[in-house]
Length: 362
Image (cartoon, rainbow, N blue to C red; front, top):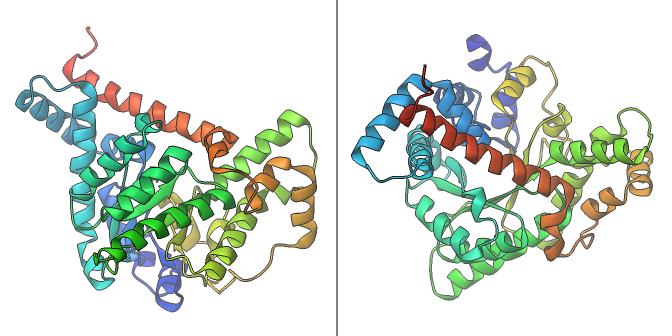
């Protein structure tokens, strides 16, 4: 794997060197991020599940640090301590990307830190925490969920100088609302003569999670389609959003995440977009032999698109720019499922801390 990481034969490295598409690493684990940088990665994404995995990947060290922090802060809650560890691991990971940050003048080289999912109902709290996380390191980008409250927080945080990575995002309406909110924030800064050139906003589309959602719908509603059709849903939504972003001149880039098949990489090559695969998917893609050629402008097969559109109202809501109002985002099935998973990971983070402070009795 190491040899592959350092040769031009790596499809990911070739993509990074030969196309405008950039690679970020969907992990804050230091060993994985270091390897991904060897494949051309110039950024990293993180969320509560990923942060928890990063802590567990080096648990002896973090258990010791939890104990030290708890001793230094005797009244800190389990949640306070857990989030302090997330901050510390984020700063460590961000340091690995500082060279890329300088080279790309802020557009890349950023480490994502996600706002506390328990704040999803409070736009002001999300914006305030985004500003706090932005101050952790010069090259932080802050994740905020693409819900109604999240959209409000994105505009305000952008105005206050925070580069945003919209998350819990699966649909064209969400992506458009995100880009419009960020534009409003950028325009407010520009009106006051504040810098925007060094900001690097992105909007994630969790393409695989949309596929997962439609597969769950198909099972629940007993819908049968040809094999493979549902693998194209996230691809179709991403390509439609990319087309709209180009038409409207949004300054936010799209980011592909939540991989379920290689098309969540291969179909987007050639676009001015970010690809952020989990580390194990990077290994698989590098070993795939798939040529990293431009496919972003290749349309999804019309038969596949028509089948999705006709059979799945949930796909129409995801594909049409006006398929959902902003107030509907939070109740979309993929949103509810993902928010619940992130909330569960936050509770698990507290459990890791509890195991250090109050070990299970023998």
